[in-house]
Amino acid sequence: MENKHITIFHGPQHPGITGNMSVELDLIGETIQKATTHVGYLHRGFEKLIERRTVIQAFTIVCRICVPEPDPNEANFAMAVEELTGLEVSPRAQYIRVMVLELSRLAAQFLWMAGQSGSVGLYAVGQWAIADRDLILDLFEELTGARVYHMYIYPGGVRRDLPEGFLQKVQKLLIYMKKRLLDYDDIFINNASFKNRAIGVGVVNKDEAIQNAYVGQVLRGCGIKADVRKDAPYLVYNELDFEVPTQEAGDVYARALVRRAEMDQSVHILEQVIAKMPEGEIMNKLPTHRKFKLPRDDTWVKVESARGEFAYYMAGDGSENIRRMQVRGPSLVHGFTLLEKLLVGQELSDVALIMNSLGICPPEIER
Amino acid sequence: MFDAIKNQFATDDILIKRADLYKVNVTRQRVFELITFIGNNYNYKTLNAITCTDWIEEGHFALTYIISTLDRKSTIMVQTMINREEAHIDSLSKEFIQAEIFERDLAEMYGINFIGNDNLKELSLENWIHTPPLRREFDTLEFVNNNLTFREGREDNLDVKVEMKRIRAEKKAAKEAAKKLEEEVKDGK
Image (cartoon, rainbow over all chains, first blue to last red; front, top):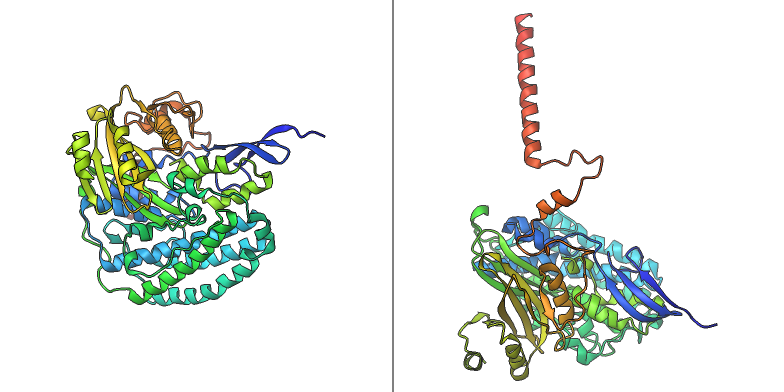
């Protein structure tokens, strides 16, 4: 019997979709002929909201741009305002920011692991990963008062000093993580069910990867040592020792191996941060709310998020409002240019697997 | 590189923003020539983003092409101004595949026509017939008040300032009534 040409929607309500978006798939049998990404389900409009707001008002919004990892947004926002206004950040605040960003990276990788393992039916991994992520969220709650949206990294420093005994708690967590991550190798990374599904699937062409502005594990998964923390160091990353893991194959499995190796590197960075944490002030003296004005100037700042380069363009106009802030996360290019290309020729059952490996977060597209 | 740009593109508007970030302002007629020049001669070959800022009071959009070297160690912001009333410029999507989605995004949000980009269809909006939403003249609150209605049962979704004033007035009246009652009791009325 001949296979019919059919069109189906993968999402927006589908357990294998990365957030509020959908992919329209043209299929013959189980094979994808054409993929078209659709967004528009979120109704957020962060960039419009921010245009009419002062620095402190916008600060409460930016962390909501990406639920799995709000902290790179806070860091970008703070760095952009600091660059435009010439604000200095103390060494202690910079080390604390690195600690928050690396804990955030670990938490985001656990969330990715939950999604990626679910896409191949390994649901126990997801339950473990969410439970382990919660241990990090407990620390965030103690430090910032919030589990997910921290509103902690503010222009000029950080909003609160470390509570008593906090570094010891982070140290204790790292000891646990070092042992625990090995369990994930057994249950997930080296699991034949995952390897059989992920090897050779969703292969990214190395030559196209840089020129097309792909970022993060997509680049590193095809052998390119790209990491903002090394390429254009910010905060105190140039004082810390860490590796940029890479793989050559360019497929879903290579991207998973890179992410897993990055979790080890985050633990290694956090250990150094604890050992080197300096004393001193955590927040610079700031102008009052209404006098906190951005000069007529613009800048481009970027950090390495758990899913790759994450950048902000910010322009001021001499008033207390932010004239323009544009978010450039991995998702716009990965979710359209790359995903629509990678899915062609793949099987329907691999859609969730490939999507999860690309780090797509729809709020970054519908900013 | 800066001398070459100054000589070839007759612009002194070159800024060193950080050790790894530069900015060049150039006329719209020469912007693509400049992008090709820095790509071919200085390895600025990755288009990271195209951003737009609406300077409504000056009548133009500032379009910024953000381009990095292949090793990602250096970035240039190439900025040009276009008239916001007749907002159009050539597309970069033939040179950079990812420009297609950046331009589609800006076309929807600002109403800019990127000539040569065949895929400027709706991205996140649906059947939008109003002012492009990121233009400064688009007033979100006014749009909501004119086009949307509150769902039944949400009548308490009122202006916060008015509500606060009403609550304060109610509290004050209750306090005064209690005081009056107390005085009446005291007087034995």
